[in-house]
Length: 373
Image (cartoon, rainbow, N blue to C red; front, side):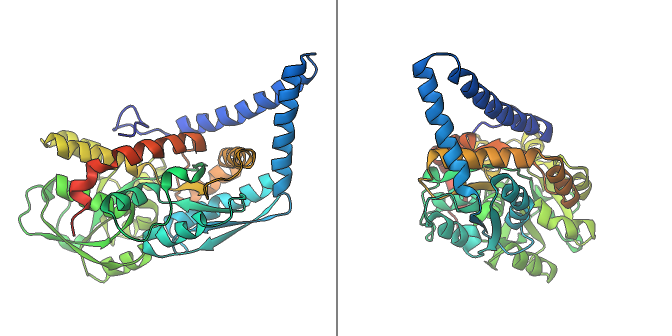
């Protein structure tokens, strides 16, 4: 199981992740300072190593100057991946001295866009937002379509992630998640048969033994919302920010969130909803059910990752990672993210890379639930 948070009820906060950004930037500064001091220390071996490192870093940074980077958002404009991509693109362009173009490549619940990104030349000029947790769930399901190995992608970092929300139509008459635990008639849930929302749908409804019927055939968040508003189903489980307009407009009510959002405007959108960890602690479930829910929570934290194809040269990847860390820490990015209701909870690329490897080993815990029809 991935362990990113020491307490499931208290996910890593923006402040904690902001500290991580500070550490990353500070560390980079210390490395450069060390390089400068070692070159004048008189130690030939240290000086040689520092010169080599500095030269490689300088060459990698120079490579991006004046270049055009394609940043693939594997969903439609307005979707969660698109929001993060457009949020960080201007800062990345400034930090790298490059042009960063966001390209929407929707399809397959983000798989089509990630396939395209992963197949690109590993030169650092094609990046993409990655639905890592959802793609891992699809891997467990043995769903066709993925042509990439998640553990081998070049992870730049995670600018942020946000909770997923299980919501219902006001017409359903259900006002709390606890009501669903005693319901007898199957609820109708609209579902994109792929991705993080689908994983949460199947694990949570299955583990909590809530009778349900899935209404599938939707291909994106936008079509899912259209189906929900049209009354094709009265429930859905999706990432919170794209659902905010429906929640704030009274067209939907939040029953459950995977964790409490850090931004005040998102907290207002899910007022009254229970967190998944609190729901888990209030109900007696079997060991396998508990393990599946906890693993789903961990996988849900592996999303909105920025990465590139396997094999990006180490020095270039380091430059990209440092650029993302700086962008997420900038006051202009923080202000814009708050305005848009997009949480910033930075996680370094090396950490994401390690967590993905662990996730691949442990994702089978959700198999009994996601392998259904």
